[in-house]
Length: 128
Image 1: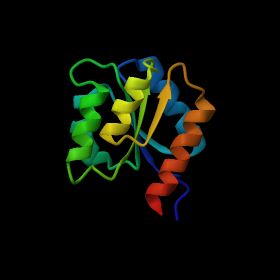
Image 2: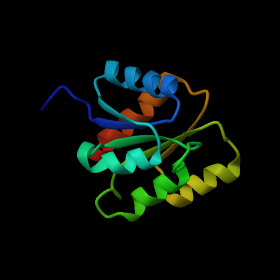
Image 3: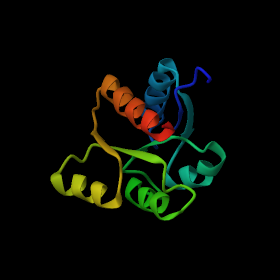
Image 4: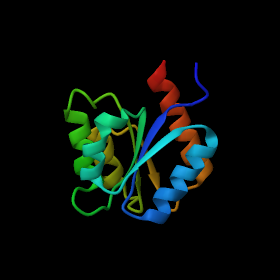
């Protein structure tokens, strides 16, 4: 077994947040790839084959909702764990995320330690 805890695809249109998440997960031992929006995520997901995708909701081109729905409806990506990360914390948004079938929901500003914990649990679940 390798030292890598799992593969994560970090999707956020904000470069600062994207790098913050990537650095934290890298330090924790994850292999991290990044994408700048939902379409970039869908274009790269088959090359990366991540265990977990962290997905910002509010993005240009293709938002996190549409991206998560696409990931869930495609057989090749339906098993990948999805964490939605958003500033929108209303119950309706959470219900919408759960309805799509996302695995976790974090609100901005998020605690990096909480993000790492959520990704770690999902990655280990994906590998077992």
